[in-house]
Image (cartoon, rainbow over all chains, first blue to last red; front, side):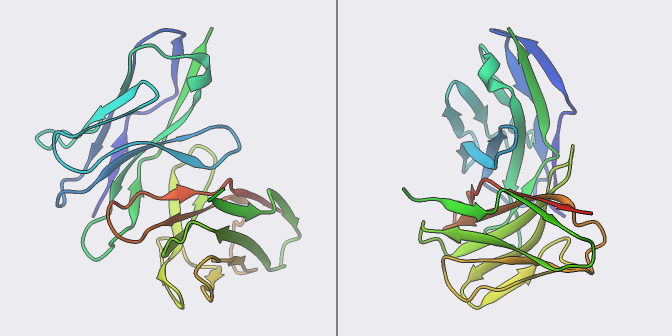
Length: 114
Length: 113
């Protein structure tokens, strides 16, 4: 079935460090891919998305490129801030008859220290 | 402002009681979803509805029930049959087509003792 695998956390960085959070997905069809962010005690917010191979999603300094050949959608940011501390979820559109559903990874906790 | 509201933010119940969590959206979205989130885990789908008066079970529907009588509302009832109901519950909605991006409410934290 569909699945999404994220790198295990937690990830701890100093402010202005480079961030990579790895995400790979099962290659069933050509799903849209998403990154969501969740701040403590809140719901998820859509961070960025990509709908086809080689698309690059970007928002608030974060980027992720849809790599069909490696079935990956890694999240990157060149210089993290303390305010980026949150949980990050990678998700893929579910395939088959599950039209409109999303399959989420387990989430990666990011902590950024001053 | 368009969005999704969930109420209340915190909910406390005694074991053996049913409890209903509210979810309302004014985004004119066709599809709505309920997820459960436990500490350190991802989101697990409880129920979803792609159109009014229709809904399907997700991955962990046992002990839960839903209704979808209006487009903007998708309440979730946690019944006494749910063995471990204490969790953070998230409601989401989407246009129902593609792309499948979903928009989330702020969540309800349910504690059952």
